Image (tube, rainbow, N blue to C red; front, side, top):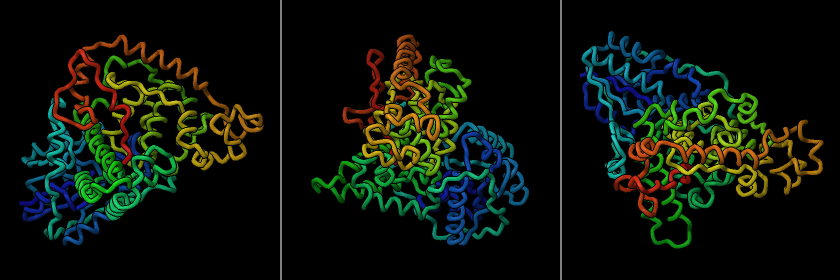
Length: 505
């Protein structure tokens, strides 16, 4: 039997259930479809495309080591499969279950329809703790944990030769300067994991929220998990092995940091499950009562200032400029930039979400759109958290090193005025000339937003709130661990923990 192994966001040969299944067949065609329409979407970017190209090159080398070859085709997935079928009458299509954006969801439905029409069996296998066709969160934790404890799939010793011609990897995206972008490929993923578990990660719990130390203390595996150069199961099990090594060793920081990291890995699957269960949350408020709370047509001057790091709020601007240059921010900074955009600037998450998606090399739709809604207060079940960018700058960048690095125009501003340069006696030489004056009054904007959001929360339909809780709320014990209990009773307010936990990977 001839099988087409369709690689998507799973660019590796190890711990690959779909590859393990396909390798049993007589002939295997490893296929990757580069889809120009996807790379023209508003949530994709050149930095993501470059990371993909590097990861595909690495995958090609790995497959050649097995005696096969990665067949790259450029075009619409259904058209590519149809043309391939004319050359190779394959009987089966194998891939992993993808939780992508609305575009990939629609594409997969088209592929499924095409496969049925030709009598081709399409087998999709899970590669994470996300569960297909889950109708409520009761019992989810047990199913996720069972997957994480299963043995990893070894890569096959060899694959049947595949001599089909391959298209070159095209350059599809416009230039996207990102000088400090992380490189793609499995070798980089393994190096990051090893370095985190043996050296960098010992201060993870303490330093993850810092815009400076967090860049080193966090694992930085997020883009590799997003493109599947490494699996979350590999990371979970490697972390568990390291936890056993450090168990009982006092005061070295490792036990607490690794426990926190395992928690974040579980939360990653939790948030991706939300999009799997409700694909519409990419475009519609999770709690429907919040539709129309903010104008869908944004204030373009505010949106542009926020995107370009020119709001006149130094710490916020530094974060946005850092993101443009590196493709990464730690979670607290991500939450803050969304919070300020949503509350202080009163911009709808559908206006700000695409820009951040493009900037993040590690863009993962399930996490991104769930967090965009959570941090902008439209889930209806999480306590709104309105970050003060001045306070965050003072607390998270006490020396001003991060802010000054990305805002060199503030070099002459004394430390005590760095986060509020308008209070400096020399502000007249700076504001409106080399650095903008603040476009809002932080305290007034927060006060107005708080009144609006809590007025809305008091008037929402509680039946809709209970729907969201049943389908999406976490089931946790008093220590914050996922459990298989039922959702909170209707008379109890859901715990706000989801809003406060971090996804620093």
